[in-house]
Image (cartoon, rainbow, N blue to C red):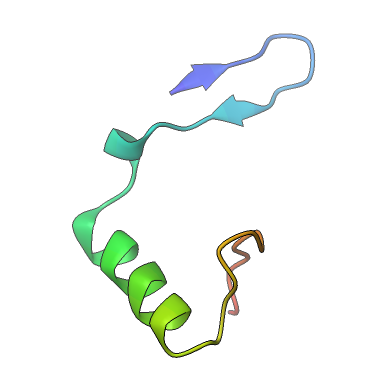
Length: 44
């Protein structure tokens, strides 16, 4: 992860996400719950 000192923004790479998280996103896109261009926000 790369953290910007100015804004505190964390730039994440593919390696920062677990395989279970990635598979969950794929499943939600396939079922139409999430569009590819829509940002993911935690539902909890």
